[in-house]
Image 1: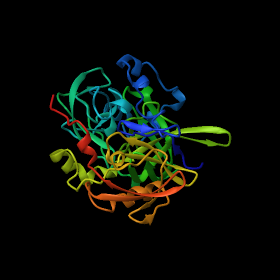
Image 2: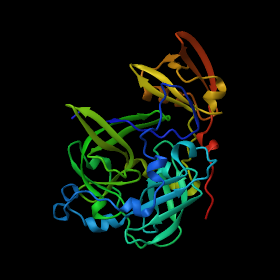
Image 3: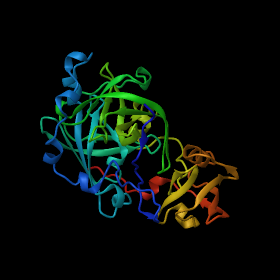
Image 4: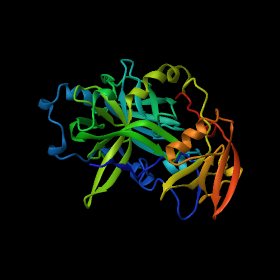
Length: 361
């Protein structure tokens, strides 16, 4: 099978777009899909043929399923991310320590003013959105109470290879747990200025992938669900998910716990949502009042250079920007606009400056 291609994204901002826009039309959080009740989320199930059988596993599936809880976050209407990510977000969180610390995908908790956590037996407690790492996309939640569920032991993506079987666990127990296969491990670039050196791609797709646990056949956590992906193969549409590798957490965990973010200087953020279109890097959206907007970048511009050097792909574009220096660095972009060359100096910003900060509930 060829690599699955992501068709979703998480542009965390108000945006300006034109007709050929890049959008989260089918993204991991959709207001219509996620503005729902707990009952809506639990009244479905995988057919038995897609559920893993405990006797074929080398770990206690029942205990592992208890480690994944439902997460619901409420976001103010005027939050920077509300227009695209919505004001009510549902997904999963995975308990990773004995003190109840939970790992999730960061877009679920970005700018959250309240977080609620629900165990598989129906117990509900509040949580605090402790940290969000823009580089990896991972987020941490500290429960403000006891759910009485065990932590899931963290593993490594090195333990699983393309073609290996795995298990995707969502909140809700066995009926929301899926037999899956790893179909690719490769670089991923998202148009919201995001790059993973190696993401994990699985199939079939879990319908509630956000924050879901990807577990190896040894029962260890190897990834956190981030995106829905699909590709046409032999007149069929193959659907799957993209997972953020668990390995990205360990080097930054202490900083996230102490500071809410990594100790490294923040990367320069342009607020410019760019996609690849027939070999060109086309700006599909601009964050309103963001750095690119203030510098005069327009939707439809084609990016050809960063700091005088040509860039040929999305990942190369973002890495070239990040190499120029930390947030605040002026980034010189070479553009094509309506067939004419243009050069624009963009004073980058720290993305975090645009976001509401969590307050302890």
